[in-house]
Length: 392
Image (cartoon, rainbow, N blue to C red; front, side, top):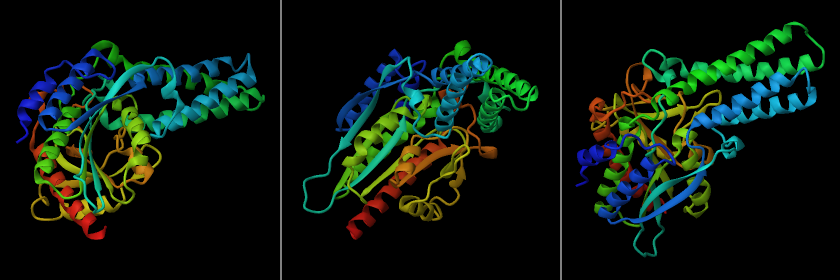
């Protein structure tokens, strides 16, 4: 049996697991040791990434502010600069691929992958991927108690003001709407600078979170479920655990993994279960995420999970819900049309208490949702594997 409590203590003993830091290297080695004990085939996959979203925010705000400042002096150049960064920000904050993640400064992080290949057989092979990110987030003042419910609203306001800034700068360059568009430009300029300071000050003051709930619990769930499934010896199942890094920089580790490996997956025979932040609240099967664009989890695996959640074993232990404050690694799989579910824990008002805060420590974790997630994912995987064999 996977030593759940011991694993959580060892992983959270590190002060943090920030992407591309020495602590991430230590965490990756610990994960490798546990996967070795589970007799997995292990590989580390390095990729290039900003260390945190702080770098990305500074690039986006810096580009916009520079463009807005240059409007009176270099009209066309400033407009190209402004609208380029508006597009980059729109893509990034609507959880699509944005080239801004390639801007300096880049560092090397690594995904940790464990695999239990299916035994050679003539029957079609099904692939199941268990996913969780192991990196930790910078501390954010915007996620403090009482403010976290406004994070998504602030993000939507920022995107709206970016469009407003681009329109006002274009009108000003054309000589229309003066002096009012000038006031709008200066107002937007000030707002972006203030927002950049507020959204990153926590990192400069306190560094990274310990990340016990977000997401040591998710990693523990993925490994515990993998241990159960490998011992179950489900026929013709290719089982893989992918523990990603740089999720807190924009789901970048998951993006690289999906881009590299999705072409290898058997068409119509692959499913993914993602675990994220299972430390406080009730286990929740996510139905929808997204900022301005709705990202709906509507696929055969979701349908199977929804039916399973209504059975007596899980009806009172879990719920369905939505999450619109940032997003999950599984966003790339939803966009790619791969059957995927995400399991997380949500408390009152659909919130994740203490994430991105210094209080996200092992002492604050309630493991009820974690244990339910393990039981539910195991049951779902067995049902899915059975259905795949019947329809193959």
